[in-house]
Image 1: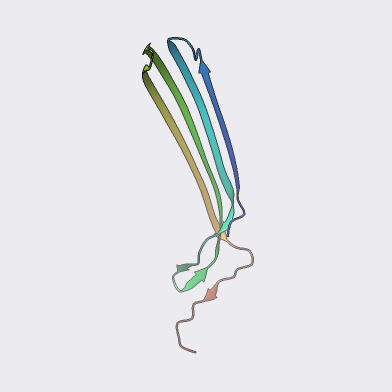
Image 2 (image 1 turned 60 degrees about the vertical axis):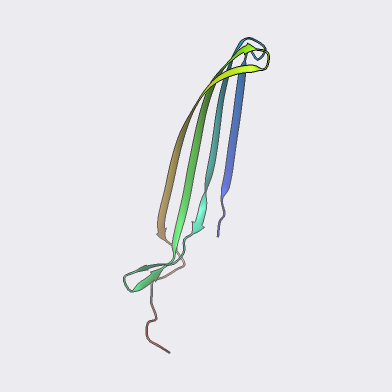
Length: 106
């Protein structure tokens, strides 16, 4: 079960697009965050329902140089840097209580 938010940003800039040498720069960011419930985990002889808060961020930086030698011929050098940050916390849900796992038949 998810109640999450996703935010995205994307910016690109091209310098001298009609010149023989063209420079391109770009930046992208995305964030995925919000609460969710994790599946039941067994800890020793108990089952626990855990509340999980996620915040995942991703930053991409791009740079490129285009060299246009002849009409229809282009030489390109591109570089991309990616930075990812993942933050997740787990805690017991407020409404869930620890209960003994049923191992004996009814």
